[in-house]
Length: 276
Image (cartoon, rainbow, N blue to C red; front, side, top):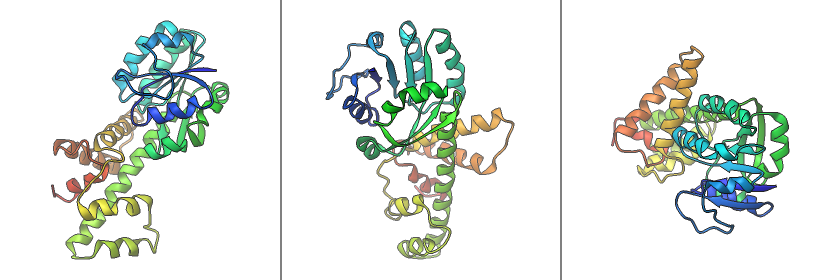
């Protein structure tokens, strides 16, 4: 299968590089990049591809990309690996099929080091027979791959995942802030919490950020803000009200207002504890 990969950013470039090791691949980005595979002149490269993969930042970029790809989608499989609203995906998917193409939503979890190693987690939504057809391509990029169901359900899973991460981080922020106000040693607190059921990934990996009040970015505040708002949209579409999620949405809105957008999402500690 010939692959056209669109979006060669922090995650997209290593993902495309891994696919290019096993498949005939050309890549494209609106910013010219040095790549270990051929760099296309534009979207018309989709004409020669069997599979199109995209990794773009936001809903509006995905919609704009759909409009660019319309002339080329007949008999193509489009794997969109962006984190966008599942509601937007579910709106576009029937239009792709009407044009004679197929689309999967396959957002990823984990960060750039996993992308480089080909060890991402991948959540897949769309037709199962199409998922199975492109699974060898997905396996170039990820080790943990799960099919969740129809259109938009891969994205729904990604939003559920990140919403829970946001709530867990919020709890970590609150408790470490309370411990600090009690004049406790944060290293001791983290170790002690690990002795019981409070042990968790975001306690162990983000505690030093909070301790040092420095937040090198693995996943940014602005990206978490985007994802928790997608989760909020989902709750509203289901006529649900989740107080914990509502609180997290407010925290990330304040973090954006405080100019923390580009810092790691653990910088939300500064909002939760009234410190900047």
